Image (cartoon, rainbow, N blue to C red; front, top):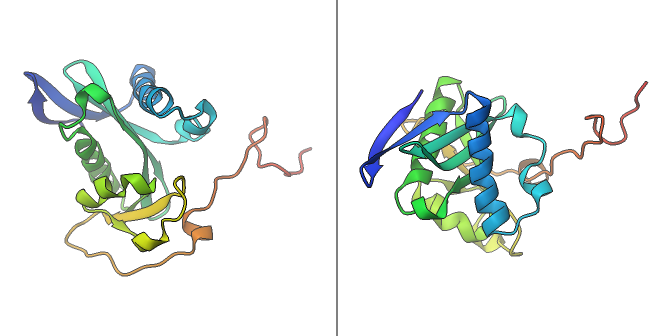
Length: 188
């Protein structure tokens, strides 16, 4: 599913699923520029071992990669993560286009819900896109604490009220050892 939505300076803005290694490398390059370059995020935090089990959607302006998002799939929901748009392309709704591509893919896979975890400083952007917090704004305590937000895949089916414990919604991923097994797993 490739989508075209408008243009910037005469160049078409498109989104597509990364299907080739070149596409995936472009998505990684966009993320590295935004998160490691701009936000000084550690490499090990940005590239956390989930990239090759995820779907990557990339936005292009003409032939130039401009934005990317990683999507992980769960039983009944999808989790867009690592939304990144190169600085020179910001302000042109590329992030919204990437998230809409994710929503459309989730609908075709039977997902009911999209779930994201964002920094408190980014919640206004997501709320503007129609996302809802799972916890009230007063719960934002620390600057690096993540806020869980959700959005329904099908807007005609409103989201029921829901609350999840931090331990369930905001759980940390398992730490993997060099063998790829969870730490503490008995091996032969």
